[in-house]
Image (tube, rainbow, N blue to C red; front, side):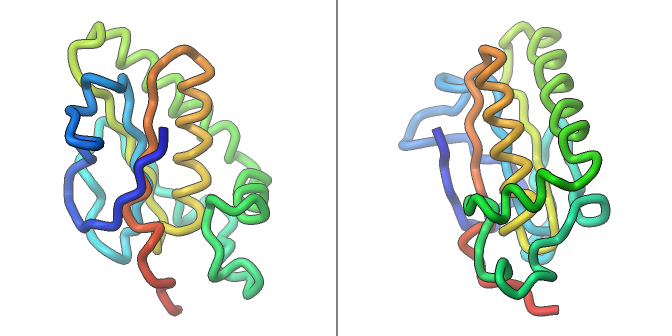
Length: 150
């Protein structure tokens, strides 16, 4: 399940369609843009600004998002991207096991605008967690925000 929000908040989403996320999910992965507001509170925060290819630098991808295949492939082809995704999945699985399902595990992934790198990485982490048998949701906080001009 994907929830897309563009509200500015310093916490991860806690509800979906009026339901407490802990009732329907084990893990919530939130993508966001540091250029719009601070990182949401999370168990793990990944900063994608320095070590992943930036689609914003390619004019043909600037107005697209990490939900578009060409952008996602561009980001995921960055050396180290898959290792980052795998490490986040391992962290979430281990933490979920430690808390024995007693609370929601949260991961936040940020880039400058919250439209490209963070969206692609958050979606991949969520897919990996679901493939491992956890109920994971993704929320794209800033994907609908305007492109930050540099």
